[in-house]
Length: 108
Image (cartoon, rainbow, N blue to C red; front, side, top):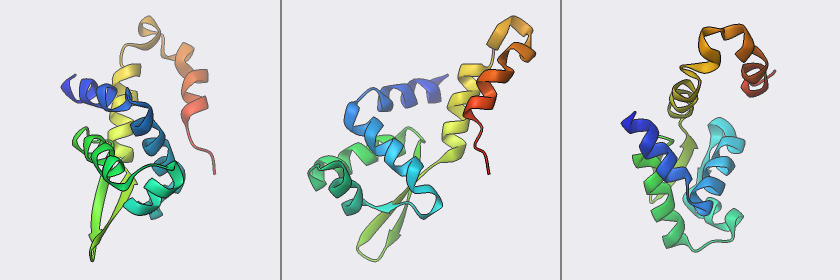
C-alpha cells in the first residue's frame, strides 16, 4: 500500500506524469535526462527533480553513463501499481475484469 501511495503521489504532478509516459514510450532504450527535458520543453534542473521523485516512487530506474544519466520506466513498478489497483477487481469475478486487462496488455 505504501508503494502505491508513493506512486500515486509521484504521478499526481503533470510534469512527472508526462515524464513517466514519455519514458514508457521510449521503451528499453530509455532517454538521457537532458533529452527528457528537451522533449518536455522543461528546465533541466526541474526535470531532474521530477525524475528523482519518480525514481523514489519506484516508477523509473536510472543508469549513469559517464556524466549523464539514462532513465527508463520501471515496468515492475508500474506492474505493481496495476496489480494493487486490480487486486480486488470485480468482486471475486475475475472474468469480468478480462476486458480491462486485455486493454492494458501490450500486444506484439
